[in-house]
Structure formats: structure tokens, C-alpha cells
Image (cartoon, rainbow, N blue to C red; front, side, top):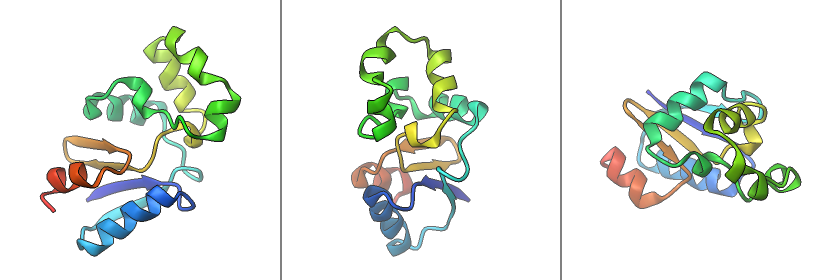
Length: 118
């Protein structure tokens, strides 16, 4: 079963959910604001995503901007960044789609189609 982690009010998350539903793909939905990812989950997802850690941050979010992370992230260690991400789900880029052996960050239809053979 796929895990679809999103913020229901986010329009990109809504598009991704509609895409999954239209394809008949089953998933378990998790509201990132109500059920914040843990440090161990984030560490695992980061490893599986193959992305630079900075790509896991929601750079367009208000919290990201208010904490001035654009200037702070470059001097932070991976451990510090992961610990920060674990403090608030609104810092995490979404949606996240987690399956067996893969983690997709953000909704890029072509990438999702390719990964899910949809």
C-alpha cells in the first residue's frame, strides 16, 4: 500500500490526490499537519528519495520564510536539517508518495506516472 502524505488544503496535494484517484491507485492518506513525520521516517525517506536534503523543504511555505531558512540551510548539517524538518510538517515539501523502495517528493505527473507505471 502506498502512503500519500499531504496537506489537504494544498492545491498541489489536491491535484496529486485527484490524479491517484483517477488512476484507481490505492493509498493511505496522511495529513502532514496532523501527523508530523518523525525523525526516523524523514531519515529513511531522505535516503530512499535520492534527492539532496534541501529538496525535502517546502521552500514556498510561510514557516520556511519566517525562519529565514534560505540563509540558514547552507550552513546546517544533514542531522540539523532532519531534526528541523521533524519539528513541523509544514516545513516538509509535499505531497510525498512513499512506496516499496521509492519516495516521490512534490507532484510531477510524469515522474509519478513513470514510477507507478500509470
